[in-house]
Amino acid sequence: MAKAPLADRLRPKNLSEMVGQEHLFGKNGVIRRVLSKNHLTNMIFYGPPGTGKTTLATIISKMSGMELFKLNATTATTADVKEVIAQSESFFGQEGILLYIDEIQYFTKKQQQVLLEYIENGQIVLIASTTENPYLYVYNAIISRSMVFEFKAVPPKEMVPTLVRGLQLLNAESDEQRSASDQVLYHIAECGAGDVRRSLNILESAFYTAEGEITEEAVDNLTPRVLGNFDKSGTVHYDLLSCLQKSVRGSDPDAAVYYLARMLYAGEDVAFIARRIMICAAEDVGNADPQALVVATNASLAVERVGMPEAQIIL
Image (tube, rainbow, N blue to C red; front, side):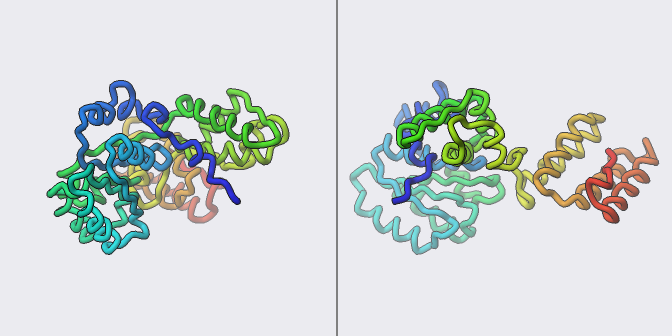
């Protein structure tokens, strides 16, 4: 029988085992303080994947004694929500129901409105998670009735202890023993780009493909170079474009090249970047250097005719 992924087998069972998010559930974290006062309210968790949103919802349900129901908005329907609500009627007088909706941005406005009545009368406590900006994708009436918490990418240094535990568990379960230096574990954490689940998956794959010691070369063969979170249609896409344009406007070549590299490695359309630089040359540089637009236009034309890396986008 196939085992659950390593990330699931190592899923934290309490706040002390959580990785990163010191601002939320560290010693003085806001969520830890809220839970210590037995004040459970509706919450919205947003941030990149693999940062602990679903895990925290499970921990909160155990700490509160509430019955946890999980729905994924990518597959759940309004009927599923109403079925949970119907079951909640048998929990009055007990601790109540905690409804966790993952990826709530995939619910339509009408589906989200169904939740309002039951949130207001206290029939359910809602915890929703999303990888997108909730102020763009979550119905305003739900946001006004909830506390919004941002989950951040987990730094590699804070991820390494979890990878150590993962390696120990894999060794305990296997007939063959593997080792990995601190440098290699840190490298695996970097490849995860802030996603604990991704890093543990890389570790597990490296464990079963390595012979003896896990090396950086073995890790690199399993995963492409990752330069962080990126989406071609969501807010990260526009955030990076804005950072690129502001870097040029602020005459910071190092920052401009950094954000350009992030978009190129993420697979952004080169012609689109070239057009953005033309806009920057026209609007931000303007008459301060009339040749900027000429250079940017020629670079864009070169990209169109011969592509990258033969064509050089000139900042």
